[in-house]
Length: 380
Image (cartoon, rainbow, N blue to C red):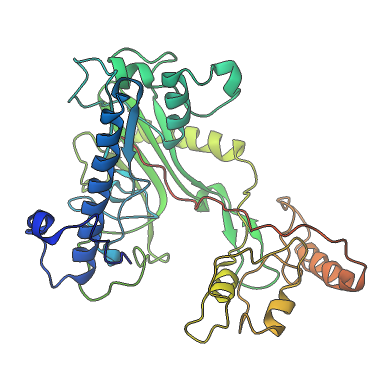
């Protein structure tokens, strides 16, 4: 949860009035609000420096969120449904703005209503600054929206007509050997946004039912929503007229539903096998923390070496139990085929364990790769 911001970024005498609409009893919301004020003050300090250096006309400032808020940590998505890890507006409809001294006067203070995916930021900023051409960037999913955002003109390759909001066609197995198994199309968690003219439709398949959630005053140390994965439904919303997502049009817009289902099937068939690895959160925490019975170092350091046997960490007292790891106990398996032998994964684990006595080749210590959580990208 958010901690108390430093006095240099949050001044009670000058800033407390900004939180006058927040009840102090909602502990997490109060601290979350102070953190946001501190962020605003930090941005102001940075931009004051940019202006003092005479760099305003060659600077682009882009501020955006990565996803909807966690009510349990003090965030508030109302009046939208849901939150982080979900595809409702509360999970993906986030505030964002872009500013530059070079921005056309007729664009400043306006609202861009075109669709924008998180992956569009890179080509947009690279093209706007002249840092790269399309040839330099190669094949990208992102689109260059710099002309629209900075000059109010048509983007160089047009506007987006759809956003693949979520595609999760894999499921983590609950028992060893841990790996990701393919899910059938009808069982996958997917979401798609399409725009035609001014109309924006959103389809969500196998989404956990969720309502509007307000900040939770009973807890301040857990993240996001408690999602009931046994209560899943499929939705089709016209978010142009119904951004609170109160009217499910799944049984009404039959033709639109069929077309969007075909598009989701296209992306389902195109999706590569997930690069996401099993969580090593428990290992990382135990390697670092000195609290809650852990015997960690107290420092954030690499905790995983290539081909490292997690049993060593266990024997050294760094961890007291092993849930999910990517060492030799439960190695990451190759992408399974849809018709693979169900015993093949177990045989592979046995082979990996049998190889433990083989000579090991020294490898440089590296941190486990950071992989983006499979969350829905924000849209604007």
